[in-house]
Length: 212
Image (cartoon, rainbow, N blue to C red):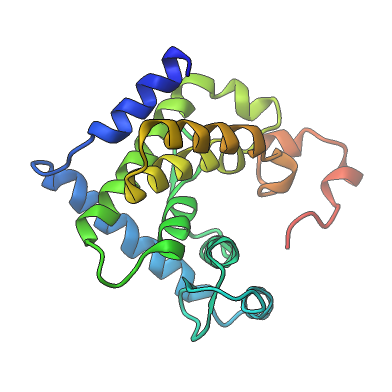
């Protein structure tokens, strides 16, 4: 394990918000915003279609706003799709993208009713902190190179949140971060058409139906 990964793994494990009610309150507000963004889109045709597709995979993963469940992977996909569908979900300037839609969607897909709300919110804060720090290091160059941080930094933040929630040990956390780092990727072309990067492209390219 390299030094940087080791530091991140250690900080994930050591983070304790017992005396940080301010951060827990911010996380709670973000969760309410997440739910509001998601429920506004639940009735949309394509969101319903995504829910129907996800319900075809057996599992106990929570699908917010739906009666059925799914395998956690596909439940997380549905939750993320629905909460971001109308593009009302929160964003952060360092990330230059959305973060709650990724973090809460992952955590809800594995959350069990008997588990602690504090642990849920703490895991969210851990993921959000990492995304913000990484965003401050790579942006704005990352964005102007055509990458969309929701798809590149989001999986790493999600891995951190999941590792904290599941209380993974250090080798397990490092492997999870490695997998997410190798699989993450989000092109600016797949983001909103108001993106300045997209506006600089030829008009015929900008008009392609890239968004669901």
